[in-house]
Length: 482
Image (cartoon, rainbow, N blue to C red; front, side, top):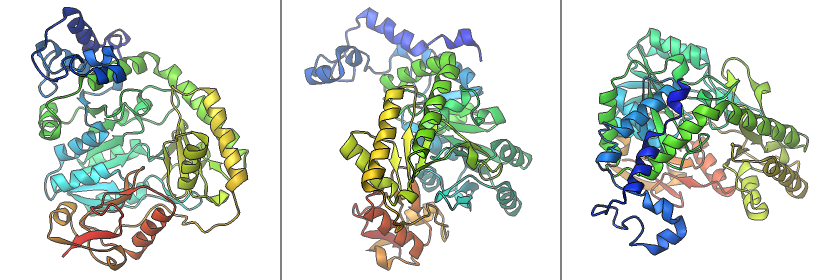
């Protein structure tokens, strides 16, 4: 990484130059730098509204960059050790969809764990690619899926020599990493493209003592959420390319779905946050790691909770662990993770990232302080004192083995009908059903609806998980193939 190059922020520099010119706008957006919408100015501030502008020559065009955006992409690629970087304004979901569609067409096989984000399943619906699911490891004590075992991946590659790509989480929502270096090597030897979802691993490229990044092991593409651990505005992301893919072809794929009215607020936030991480990332994530490690120790001293860390590494399905993640298992408290999530918000004014059946995740970042950490730990202690029990009437698993009966695209576009959830057993689903967060489907299009899945959905509703993906908002019925 060229530190002198990383001091630049080309889009920010161009925005500042535009503001200094005092250009009279007869283009969109219609609020005309805020003058037409005083309520927005009052809410967002004059400075923010003054840079909510449209593409123009001096600011470049995201769909076909030739100047400042192109330069920002080149500097970002240098920061991440990539051959190319794309600024993405549709979130990392759009990055995941683009990288799958860039290498997979209808009928192509793609190897992937089943605990992928819904965006990967959306890409299968759009592209027509066919998933070959590799069951992740299961940690019975934590009730969560882990990474993928090398033996299982080798078996999948041997049984599917015609596979086009392999898709990997790095890390999972809980901070668990598969053996990415070995998997990438295995795939490359067979000519299989390596696609990495690093929505929760942006910081791997900048910190010390963290798991390896996709680009560092020669992945073909990697999707990184700068707005998560990278500090940019929500919905901003990077799609990174290694040496193999054709960047112009990938640009065409991105332009199929990405807006032609890209937000300069999002793009300039990518530019600025990339510069900040490139110049200060090691110190930033050292601090974050220390806070998370301290919180883990304090929470584990409470009793009941288990804030897990690197001790769960088994050098296979759990090859590494991101210690900046504060993942906490709640099963031994007698409380579902979602219940703890709700109590923290409703009674303690603490909003954490996620609560599922048996775990919570508190996202620790450079924006946190030790005072914040102490408040979280003391609140968890108080919650356990008030609500904890030895009762164990909780489902203690997170992963449901999929039974694939049709491709996601075939099922999604098929002639379908709604049936009551209880009557859907052994029918083929035409839609997704999932808890969000984390956004991992319980049922996906093309999968047989099992009794296990039905029971999981019912239980998730009982404990207050936010279920989404189905046309029926109450998830009392689900669309299945006729």
